Length: 155
Picture (cartoon, helix red, strand yellow):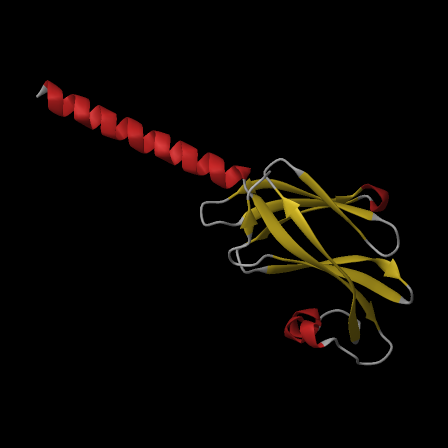
């Protein structure tokens, strides 16, 4: 009986240790996000081919033309800070606040110069679009896209 109790205790301890180590390695991982910076205008109806799947989501905006003008890859880790720069010189900060149980990321996006702060969630394979400031007769929009299995270890 005592041997059985010891075995159960040992098994529970190993399971908790394994869960703790797995959680720590997931949180320590870097998650790669693809950033697209889009110039939206009311002049014309040109839409870059890679943006066509998003145009339906942009239909509520007052713009008719959407063109990708810059791209970036950023890596985020829990508690870490990444940045990317918009064409107008404004820096956007991206902080990974937490991971949810099904692999989603909760991100805080901010730009001090714009007095802008937002919290977004993005699932594996998801894309989130965020409207930005006025720019050259239109506005900037940026998207954050996360591939389904794009994780790299911290070095």
